Each structure stands twice: as C-alpha cells, then as structure tokens.
Image 1 (cartoon, rainbow, N blue to C red):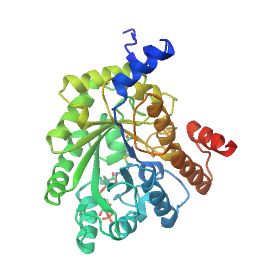
Image 2 (cartoon, rainbow, N blue to C red):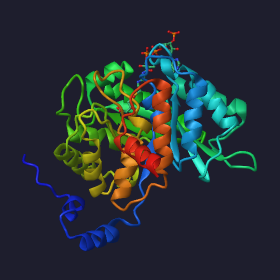
Image 3 (cartoon, helix red, strand yellow):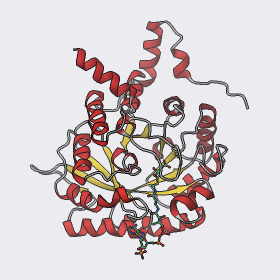
Image 4 (cartoon, rainbow, N blue to C red):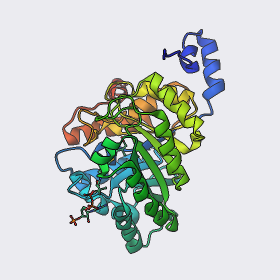
Length: 355
Ligand SMILES: CC(C)(COP(=O)([O-])OP(=O)([O-])OC[C@H]1O[C@@H](n2cnc3c(N)ncnc32)[C@H](O)[C@@H]1OP(=O)([O-])[O-])[C@@H](O)C(=O)NCCC(=O)NCCSC(=O)C[C@@](C)(O)CC(=O)[O-]
C-alpha cells in the first residue's frame, strides 16, 4: 500500500516561519517526552571486551546527573548467555546502597530479567540491603525506584534464539515474574522484540501479532510495554501500520514506549511518526551504544543525543541536558575505543568548543 504522509509536524516545516512557530508551539509546547536511557544495559551487553564494573558505574553516575529519569542498569541473565552483564549484581547492590546524586527527585534503575531466577537474584539483593523498590531520599542519598524489564519476541525464530523457548512458553515464563514483582511493589516493563523486522524471518512481521503480544503483557500486569525495532528494519509506513494496530488493540499511548535501533538510519524518522501518533516514551542509548547478540549486523540504539536534539527541535521537552549527554557520549566512546555514533552529540561538542 502506498504511504501517504500524514505527518502534520513535517508539513508545518513548509509554512512561513511565523506560522510555523505558532503551529509548533500551540500543539507541542507543553509536551513532555520521557527518555529511557538503555546505554548501560542494551548499549553495553554486546561489547566483546570486558568493561570494568567501575566504568559502568561511572557511566550510570554521569547519566543520573543529566536529568534522565530512567536508566537501564544491567540484566540478571546467565553469564554464559551475555558475559558482559555478569557484574549486574554488584552494580545493583552499589546503586541500592550508594545511589548517585541526581538532579531529579527520584531516579528509576531498571534491570532486565529473562526468567524468575533473574528476578529472585534481584530480590535477594534488595532484601539483603533492606532497600525497598521505592526508596525515599535522605540528606545523603537520592530517592530511587527499582524496576524490571521482561521480554518476549514477535517471531518464533527470534524467541528461540534469544530466550531458548517459543513465544507461548516465554509468556508462561513471565507470569510468575510479574506475580513476584507485584508482591515487592516493583514496576514492570515489558519488551516486544523484532516488532518491525526479524533477522531470521525478515521485515514482514505481523503488526497484529505485535499488538496482541503487547496487549497480553499489559493484561498480565506490565505497567508499560516497549515495542522494539531490534533490527532497525522499520520504515515510516510500517511504523504507521504498527501504531494503528496497537491503537486498534486498545493500547493507550501512556502504556507504550518505542525502542528504535538505527541500523538503517530510520530511527529518527520513525520517532517523528510515533510522536505524531501521540507516543511520548522512547528508549535510546548515549553515544548510540549497542547492538544485539542475536541480530547480526544490528547497530546501536538511536543515540540519546540525537533523540534529545530532535525532540527539542520540535518544541517538546525531555528535561535532559543535551550538552551533558553529549559529553558522556564522547567520554564512553573513548573508554570503549569505539566511534561516537551520535551526530548531534559530536556537533554539540564541536559547537561548544568554539564558544
Ligand atoms: C532465558 C534463558 C536464561 C534461558 O536459557 P537456558 O539455557 O534455556 O536456561 P536454563 O533454565 O536451562 O538454565 C541454564 C543454566 O543457566 C542458569 N540460569 C538460568 N537463568 C539464570 C539467570 N537469570 N541468571 C543466572 N543464571 C541463570 C541455570 O541455573 C542453569 O545453570 P547450570 O545448571 O547450567 O549451572 C536464556 O535464554 C537467557 O538468558 N536469555 C537472555 C539473553 C539476553 O539477555 N538477550 C539480550 C537481551 S534482550 C534484548 O537485548 C532485546 C531488547 C530487550 O533490548 C529489545 C530489543 O531491541 O529487541
């Protein structure tokens, strides 16, 4: 089916400047977008060289000062599956007992759990430190929330590769995780991977199936579901189809996040499409860190700096400092010996160096 752009935001770019400013301000000025920073988990999990725990903690501590309110801090997965995440237990204990100072009243640290064993490991640390899921701040400590993310996939092949089970089995696996999380007052995020393209089954993933799995996760008790373009194969027209299917399934935008990888350079285009449809929660990683161990050739998440720049350019708010985020992107890229994948980040630093 031909794609007929219905992007009101983009069409305003053709209007004269004064009209354009008015149109943008009237529609978007009060809009706030929440960015979930996934760099320390999704961004680092695929790095081949072992990254010291201290570097990961330094990254999280720097991020906590930028204005970001949710940080994916690690995952409780077997080390043989994702060796880079082996230090998650120590990172979690540190964040619970010595939370980084933050300019926000509360900052949420999120951990990926693939099964009940993963959540039990997290709960054991919470119980041993005596820190509850919602820990109020004090004179010496910042207020924190501990959250989890669990994940399912939209194709059988990816489900098998990523979680060693079928989609149905993965949903069964999730039930006890949600039940235990609720008893501990832990907020639950769900993921639906390969929503816009699968490395094994190709780009034509059924939007209805993605919507059904998203709805199932919410019905099972997830507080929010992040629909992920794991391979970056998503295009504007297929993002529109997906958003329509999600809406038709009754998914409210307040329960929905989008998670774009930038493998084909379409992440920001698809973000604007989603903003147009009212989505206000997006995942990203500083410096565009990342990849996916089960999606060959996948590059990182859309960079947080690029996402902030785009959102701010539309007159919307994130509460996050682009300058500080750009500095972190440059720093962590240097630490890892990788190229900084954020164009807005590099441009921002270039501009600052001339002032
Ligand atoms: C689900 C499993 C565990 C099944 O893996 P399995 O091998 O079938 O698990 P199992 O239950 O048979 O257990 C095998 C061994 O692992 C241990 N084990 C079992 N569970 C745990 C645990 N939680 N923590 C520590 N150890 C654990 C268990 O005790 C046992 O130990 P052994 O008896 O051999 O000594 C595995 O497939 C897995 O961990 N998968 C996750 C892989 C992963 O982390 N992928 C990347 C994250 S998803 C992602 O990046 C996508 C996302 C979210 O970002 C969005 C997107 O862009 O798509």
